[in-house]
Amino acid sequence: MAVQSIERAFAILRALAVGPSGVTELAERVDLPKSTVARLLNALETEGAIEQDQIGGEYRLGPAIEEIAGGSSQGRSLIAAAQPFLVDLSEQTEEASGLDILEGRQVHFMDMVESGQDVQVRDWTGESGPAHSLSAGIAILAHLGDAAIQAYIDGGLEAMTQSTLTSAVELQERLTQVRSAGYVWVYEEFAEGINSVAAPVFGPDGVVAALRVHGPTYRFPNPDRSHDIGLRVAEAAHQLSEQLQEFDQ
Image (tube, rainbow, N blue to C red):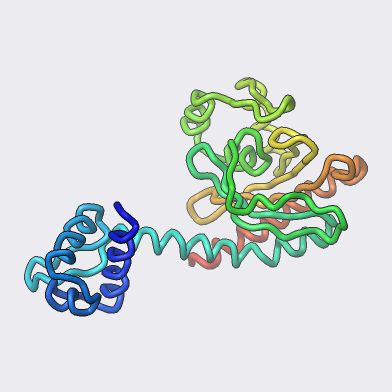
């Protein structure tokens, strides 16, 4: 679709966000020829972005738009709920903390709170990486069903660095350890020079995300504090999980 067509399609969607409308009225509202509006409406209807009332013939926003808006709202709610815990973790550990989710085979970095250190780690918010190479991904994978875990393994375990875990047997062993400990450490497996620890976050229907703390290898973690930091992340994830489940009641 050309840029002009995209702009016109969005104009139509914005107009329908105000309320249902017929083709003639809609053409007047967006200041476009009726034939152009009809063509764009047909394309938008095919994608589920709009739908036509079978009785009155008016158009309104469709299920695809509602699905996108709903997912965005849920994402924002999760980020908002996690924010105080991320701030607290960064203050306790003196390193950056983050919130991540799993979509397919990729972990998406949803939010990050920087540390107070002079040397900061990179902010990956908005980016993604293979689940098996990230502490958040492993924390989430550990709490999926056996079929989902096997399907992930069958898709291949790509090496991101020389330290990335690429053995299916070793990954399964690590997932078992995560379930027992409540958190997982990853050492330079996604990016060289970066270590991280994560713990799973649960909603009413199961695991939904992970809280993560990460920092440069030369200072993080302090060997004497690695277990304590892991427990702090796990406790924060547990408290966030309880909050999310209370919201749903």
